Amino acid sequence: PEHYHDDIESVYIPHGVIMNRTERLAHYIMNDFQDDNIMVLCVLKGGYKFCADLVEFIKILGRNSNKYLETRVEFIRLKSYLVGSNDQSTEDLHIIGCQDLSFLRGKSVLIVEAIVDTGKTMKALLKHVETFEPKMVKVAGLLVKRVPNMAESLTDYVGFEIPNRFVVGYALDYNEYFRDLNHICVISRTGKMKYKI
Ligand code: PRP
Ligand code: MG
Ligand code: MN
Image 1 (tube, rainbow, N blue to C red):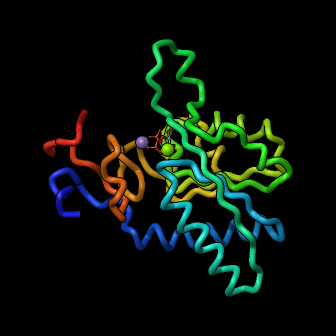
Image 2 (cartoon, rainbow, N blue to C red; image 1 turned 180 degrees about the vertical axis):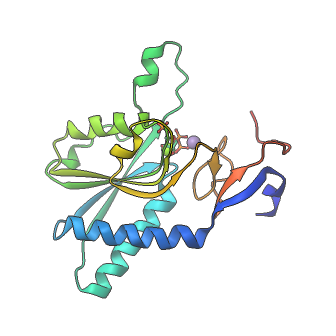
């Protein structure tokens, strides 16, 4: 949207490219899950657009190939940047709602996340999910940061590997702004930054 112009340095991944890649990932996912129904666990808020589009592609591909996979979508809201005083708290997963994931028991689970950055959020979530004894767990991450970390090995389906830049759009936020952008963009360092706290 126009009101963001001063704050966006460049479009990083155009919406169309995101869609093409998401369709590709949907294809891989369908091959791996075979005849299992998919229990999708969408990580809010960042994951909502990617999740919606991914599930849509799974449906369309299933329809076109007569290999329809049933998807059930559940949501979990996580916060990675904790307002904790001690170091310990930063290792904790901050779950807002939906702590009881017992509906995952025995299911084939696909966690859908917008970005795996340091991997802290995903690592903690995987640990939490495993306690409910699902049949299998796979992770789809639209973006994975190319920084020295274990992020890559946490993510089974990687949309794009990106360098360590702060990106927004397609449900990714900066102080809750920019989620409504369709493209993934890099925010300007020189802009007015009127969205800063
Ligand atoms: C962001 C992002 C991931 C997480 C990645 O979420 O959507 O969930 O941080 O960071 P990490 O790999 O370093 O743990 P955020 O906490 O900003 O919540 P939001 O999705 O509601 O914006
Ligand atoms: Mg998030
Ligand atoms: Mn955020």
